[in-house]
Length: 172
Image (cartoon, rainbow, N blue to C red; front, top):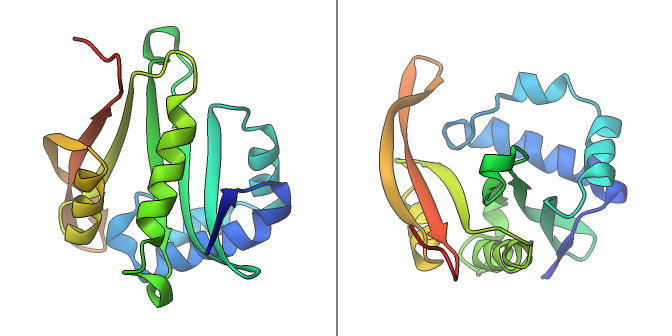
């Protein structure tokens, strides 16, 4: 498995994997498939091209096939620039349980840690996703609250844990 930062040349593979994730695991994502389908592959390419150092996506490749993804973005407001967010974590079912998610998460955290001024990384995770929660806890994240009814998927409400990874030098 090859882990690397995605570029605009990976936009179509990313768009297709994201759509697959949204369609097959709807309770894990805040975006619905129909929302993604309104966005073109070129828009995805533009985002990858213009992300800068504070916004990036890493992918896990098996040969040429994108099998997993994890995104990161940094807050832009002056009083919030010390925070970054993990988003869009997904690993194809065919390669789950093989350390792909752990490797992706580690690479994103390692890359984010060197951004000047970053003090913490946040994420949200559906309370139903026990494997994901364990992955995040093993990476050092801890929950600081649960948002009831964070998502409405069909007629079902899904709660989400809010989790934080406090980086070296973080002080309250």
